[in-house]
Amino acid sequence: AAARFWRWRVQTRPQSAQQDLAELLEARFHHRAAGDVDAALAVTDGVCERLHTWGAWGWEEQLCHETLSWAADGSRAQAVYLHQLGIIAQQRGEYERALEHYHRSLTINEDLGDRAGMAIGYHQLGRIAELRGEYERALEHYHRSLAIKEELGNRAGMASSYHQLGMIAQQRGEYEQALEHYHRSLAIEEELGNRAGMAGSYHQLGRIAELRGEYEQALEHYHRSLTINEDLGNRAGMAIGYHQLGRIAELRGEYEQALEHYHRSLTINEDLGNRAGMASSYHQLGRIAQQRGEYEQALEHYHRSLTINEDTGNRAGMASSYHQLGRIAELRGEYEQALEHYHRSLTINEDTGNRAGMASSYSQIGVLYTQTGRAAEAVALTVRSLLIRAELQTPEIRTDLHWLAQQREALGEAEFQRLLAEHLIPEVIDAIISRLDQFDE
Figure 1 (spheres, helix red, strand yellow):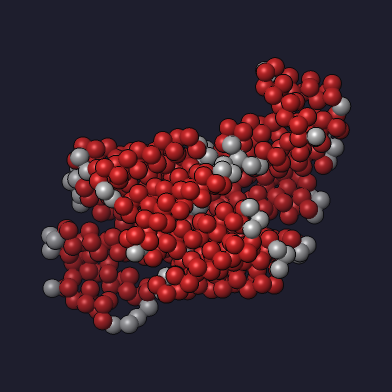
Figure 2 (cartoon, rainbow, N blue to C red; figure 1 turned 45 degrees about the vertical axis):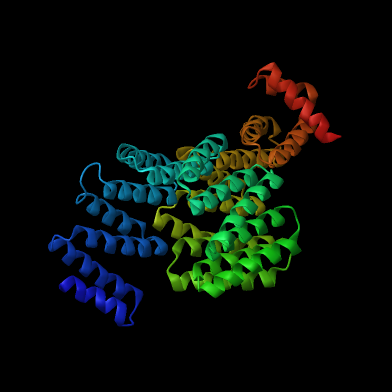
């Protein structure tokens, strides 16, 4: 009766989100005390969803661990909360811990014969591989997930798989293939009437157009996505939409308009308590200030983003913030400080196994060395970045080829090849020299 009372209050009495949360936790306690574990789990799901949106991952993690102590070994509830712990670790950039939770959850679902749960597990294993830049492994997991969803006739799940396959192709610069996957996902969502999914697909179609420099087409897709989210009252989706409209304005040099969009996104994220979204907004505000040469203001925004990422334990976000702080220091000629920031970013990326992030750090340190007369030291770093990006098949390869060409010019052919020989076998050296010659042409 007490549990029903507290849930009734939440449903009928308008109050703050924090007060709602406190009363839901009261209901959860009473359901558990009455021995109604299923109801306690249902309330826990709702509470965890709110905490996750707010970026209160520590509190959410505590609740998941407590709830796990109620669940029987090998039960579906145990699989669900292990999976959620994986989601939290993933958000923090703790990819090894996330993998541990996902594998434990997947094993339980396999033992239970829960094919739907297995599909979700493989999908999240794909997300971790994708975030670490291990695109072949990601594709393997996504295809396993897709095969189960096709077998079950889970059309919504199939749409999600096609969406992620599009993401992999997008990150590899295979834009036509990405478009094919996104359109397959969109067709299913339109068939199902899944407007939220349609908004996500239009958003990604906008990303492809943006990456190809087709800004008018990108705006068209982003506005279609934003309109759907406004109709649905999906404020989180609206925040993302305004953020991307800001990106287009920023890319066109329309900085005032970009700031307007970023601030609208930030306001919504603040209202929602979405700290991850706030960190992203501050990061972009920092980029605008950086591009305008307002380095003090850029530092302020990057530090605000970094503080949130540190508070939430978002190591991937921290790496990105340190990288940008390095860029500001480099632009101000504070090279030692820039290196310190780049190395902090690199350390996090190495710890989390984020190979794309590692390549970015190696590349930028190599650029700094090249620009400060240390081309000989830069060669090994640029080559490391190039080899990772070649394996990942990302378009940033051209950046590394550009700087290797600069290093070859500064050092002379003989010294450049001698340095390559210290790190690479002859076949790889020949391949790099051939690519450089083609790049120069």
